[in-house]
Length: 242
Image (tube, rainbow, N blue to C red; front, side, top):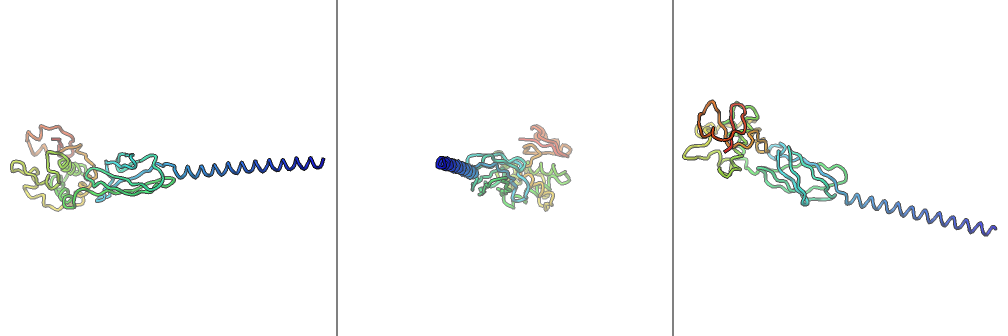
């Protein structure tokens, strides 16, 4: 009888040991699964993109990574399902030098504050601020930014020169396109508010809605400028696209 009890006890001990071994193995497998999941988990990333010359948020553009791209809207972008680790991120935008940066995506929330340089030289940015003062002195901030934006819209257009200085000093049939160039007001030094308007336009802010020209209805009766679609009316200026 005693021998039978000992055998039963030994069997019970063996069963308990086997159960414990199986449970430990299950926990180990679960832990390994958690480690592998964490290692290969994909996280969304959030970021801001600013113009390097001003620190203003970029109004438009795009970012791309591993074949995935996302638009930049008012300086912000989101990329979903980005694997953990180091990646190369490409940034593009209007009036910008395409830029590549290396980022490291880690578990948890990933936010990146990035900058992208202008495709224009400081000389051209200064010229944009000067023509903004000359053409929009006395206008509100939106009116100044709109004037600066029309110059940049001409740079983008195939109808006009491909540089800011080329647009400002362009002559057609011997006539300057901007009266301040002819009368010398283009040489007035730009003020902080003029630079701010130029910076806003360079960051993609365009209250003119894509205009390539503008006029003051109180100062001109020219039929040509009045013959094109109006895109905006801001303060004393009417903006049009040609």
